[in-house]
Image (cartoon, rainbow, N blue to C red; front, side, top):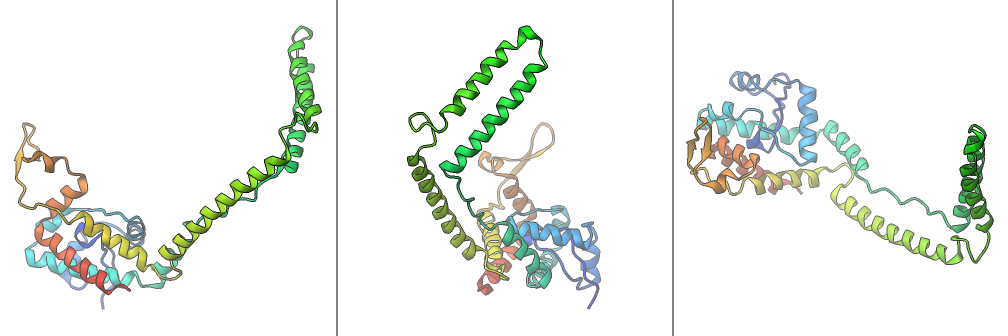
Length: 274
């Protein structure tokens, strides 16, 4: 078996698949046209699967191949990607991603007693800072600081007044209710996360990636006509195709044979994933 080698990932026609092994010299020479290093290719592949996203480095290279070679190339790359996504290296990256996407537990709320003491501390500090600033000003400018200090002192005096304070017993009930709502949302998201990202098992993520490719490549009209505009750029005659997104147009340029081969491989792989 020859040396491991990855190409720039996400050749359109293999759902962003990346080659892990070079099967023959002809394939090796072709892959070398997609200049990259192994680690970058692996990383880009993981980002694509987890996106999911798709990137096409050089459609022209694929279009220049004979039809039979395109299909073989797609299948070779697809098979190698299938091998890579079950390696310990890939699963380790997946588990880290899983933790990164785990819902965050809501912080314990602060209730009225704690909030009141924090507010009291802030007022005391504000009075001290304002008095310090006042002393640094000219005498004729100190009056405005006195007004600010008096406001702070008034608020400090009212903080324990049950008739005037904002920190009343009913406040705690609202805080408690809000926290319960957050906890309920967290539990729901956690349950969804556990289903979407089972530990040591990236299959759900891979299935999502494959399905995204199948969805986006399902309606390509390879018979759509092109013409040159006045600037010499090729455009679709039918404006509905001209307004398609760049991914659709890349699928179109890749050609029916390669896209069909990729879809066939993807559908077969999808059927194998438990």
